[in-house]
Amino acid sequence: MKLHKGEILFRQGDTGPLYRLQTGLLKIVRAHEDGNTTLVNIIVPGETIPHHSLISPSPYYGTAIALVTCDIEVIPAAQWYEELERSPEHFRTIARQLQDKLRMMQQRIDQLTAVTPAAKLMKLESWFGHYLGTLKLTDVLTQEEIGQFIGLRRETVNRLLRESQMKIES
Image (cartoon, rainbow, N blue to C red):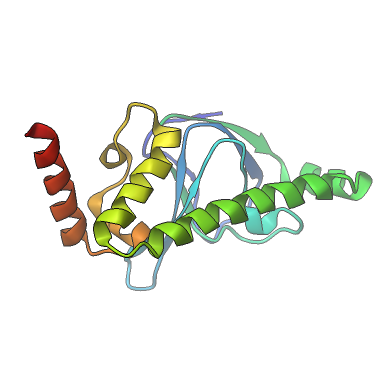
């Protein structure tokens, strides 16, 4: 299945199949009771989601939205769980996927615990650069989302991006 930038793969609270991201990037946003949303995760190629449903089914924790064009494999939930029952060696594959995600989360913690706001942004841009190629971080995330992802106010992100652009231009 192909999903284009801005298209929704699944919505928070719904239930359904699992998905394996072949190419592209997805963001997971969580809606709150007041209508505000928070960026909670970025899904990169090779991941099977939702993570919390890899062993047993559960409603989708957030809404998955394509950041760029994505190729996605749809995995029917019944098929996934039946295969787990028939082939316990798949649990090893799941454990590796979750291990990789934990390592990615450790990198996010490094981004969040950087001392200066500029260092936080620089680490995030470096991490995203691995997946974005020639795109810029601001081509796929809003300043608000960047701030949510690294624990900064949107205004701070805006200032840092302007300062960075001025350095490039001079």
